Image (cartoon, rainbow, N blue to C red; front, top):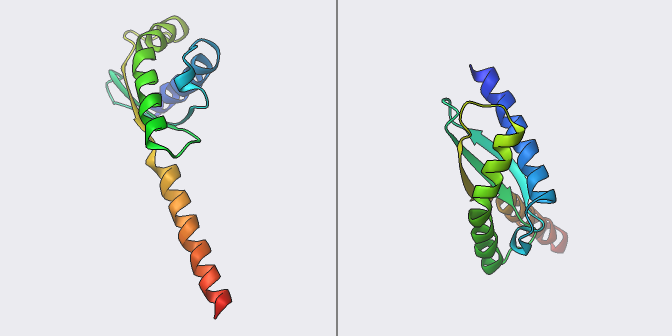
Length: 118
């Protein structure tokens, strides 16, 4: 069962990326990158993690609103592209790992600068 969930996750991620690029016309979701998908074991719920290039909180809120508005279109497109008994409910969440990685890079850079100054 675990292997099937992984395959379905990959397919959903690929299709959502394609739908966001080609079908969703909302300017709020331009530049969104799907970083990960977490599909429940019963294939009923999918959590889609995304990242955006901007670090501004207002941009993050606008992007979240755009993705929430596009859920219906994305789900109906998935229904046409993927052969599943029931298309899972979609939840979008901003991926914090990208921002966390940037924070770690910043700390390492500061540490390196302190060592050079000594």
